[in-house]
Image 1 (cartoon, rainbow, N blue to C red):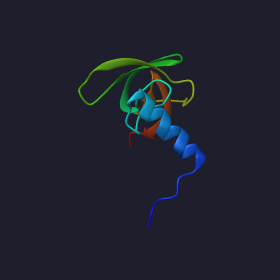
Image 2 (cartoon, rainbow, N blue to C red):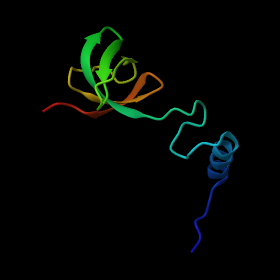
Image 3 (cartoon, rainbow, N blue to C red):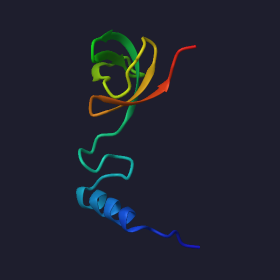
Length: 87
């Protein structure tokens, strides 16, 4: 049985194909969401590290309140979801 695609699916697939991108990337900027752990907090930003300990500054306005140790899904330098909170 073949998979039924909606018009929206076709638009997304066409946009990815036109830009040579995989379907797991943002069609606007070609970035992908990554999980980062919060190391330090400062007002509306957090210093976060990925699994290779690369540290980045992340805007946390959309997911506040955030605590040190939280794991955030980050896209284009902005936290868009909290994935885990330390126990």
